[in-house]
Image (cartoon, rainbow, N blue to C red; front, side, top):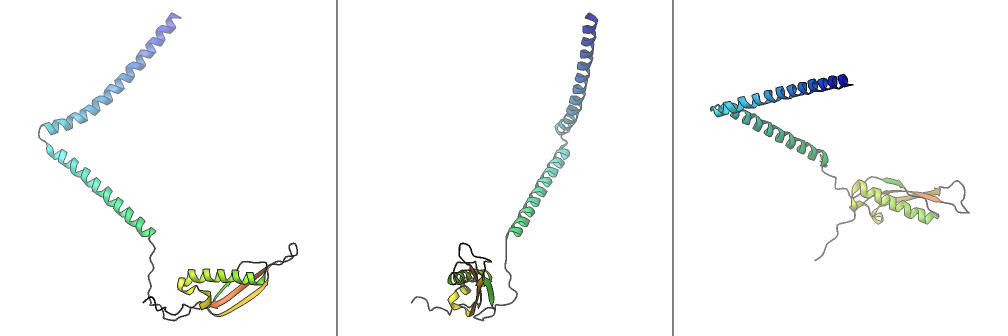
Length: 175
């Protein structure tokens, strides 16, 4: 048992010595490089220090330029622009617009649903000036049953509205 402990102590001592040697060698190389830099600066060799400072400033400027370019690219992607190549014709009405509304339990309710859907689509395509249903020309409704059977005796209807969206005449405004 005593020989075993002695051999374990010897192995531990050898391992500890190896670790200490590795640490000492790495510390010496780190110190040597720092020491040579300090020695160069102490003797007045400022060219090396100035070159390092220049390289550091150049890297900072390059990073800043890259960040500015990334921000510019992100802004360009986020921004939506509308470019019109030809002037808008001064025609009061737009082309026919056909829209199908939601189903409803009565035909008059289905017509009002078709009106709502038509106004929403006209607003999306041509703007709020063209969405007023009362200013539309050539309005026609096509209504029919949308349910196959009847649910508790109830039949549903759906309508399609086809009309030309027109903008109203210019209002005189307030005096």
